[in-house]
Length: 619
Image (cartoon, rainbow, N blue to C red; front, side, top):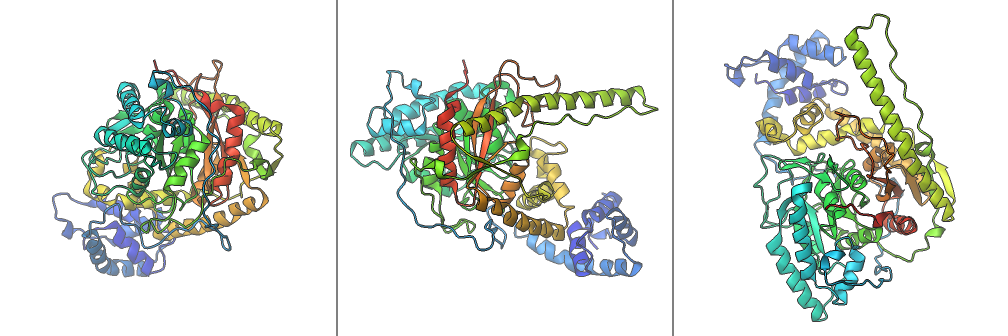
């Protein structure tokens, strides 16, 4: 009987004991017992292996149950092999569709014409590069009135991408030929009076998990450097239709994790010794550095939020199901979201207006309206804040010395305590920015209502992401090609994919059932308030990515020269590394498909603070 961990899972389920059993344990034990010199068909799962697996999984099995399992494994093996031979591509979704709406929820599908803010007059110098950090809304007015050409903007941003890529490592592929052709068409159309809207002629960059015909789509991962697709992603098609100009495919951490990709590590323009965070690494870095007018990123569990914070951008993670993901790499079918990373909230609204809505292919996309109104009376909105997230951080609990502590144990304890104390000092410093956000909102006349997240185990539910990701890239693990991925540590994808094979199917379903409770309970908060203010790096990030609620992340100031520095030798992989002169952010949340109201309120805060007008000095 051929050894296969997944056959054991199927057999377990048929005997009614799979719900708590860690099925991969058996596979591991059997694999360790194999003799590599023998053909696979000669290996058998033995009764002793089953007994050990049951003990490790803490599930009692009688001798009779073990005998039953052993007798069923061979028939299950054949069904798995047949499915494996299909060689399922990443683009094939499971036969289920995640819906983040609670029972009884209604969605407004009546679409109205967007109402943009009144364009302000901008002085245009002879040096077009002076416009590098100008908002997309302002650039749009300059292009519309023919005070600057799309071609001039495109050439300027291409030059900046080339100039700063050596320092920031944010470009995978320049789409220069395509961009120059698009810009010339845009200029001709505008001169002829055919103006498509506020993205017409505006240069942008796309995270390199979006398919673009004629160019590689690498997913940032070793082994995929020459991968290409014959059709553009839906988001790319829609931005083309809006007249936007794609200038570059930007980096992402390998397979959408972090900021390390096959070509290096994308950097934070505010402090190039730090990574940009990820996984929308290049999108956030390029916007921050004034090298594109806007970018498209994606988020499964923080991949817009974290790099937008690190790089000082404004990032919009739309409601799950607002933007079709067709032509984008799939990581988690029930959690992936595409969204804009920009300089301003209204820029995000402009981009979302062009990319949202069903495409007939991504079945999770709902026919809901995004009715942007820059003049919405935001003072009429009810605003809550997650009170516990804004309480002063409490001192950490430190490890105490033991009676017979060795010199090495003492050293480890002291190092651990030192790191905890440094972390607390950083938390205290950054807490002042969160607190000042509440103070500013109150000064704006906002009455803040204290709320709390429902008390649920959100982190425990996030393991379903790894299960879906492991299925998305099943062939990498099976074939051994996962060794080509840049990172191979205990928390990187190769390890995560293997760990996910120890996650029982029943427990995956149980996590999704718990998620249904989270959706219902968290949605109740938005019956009390329209918008919630939240600390960016907090439990809300897990909660709202699981429940599909929208979030917008806006700059909330810069740390001063007195900011705590990262300890020597510490990793910059953490999202809270901070340090002098680096940005902080604040997050606003809203109910499902209330993205327009969310953006209107966030824009009011942004206009009242002007943090978004600061930018890094690169030279």
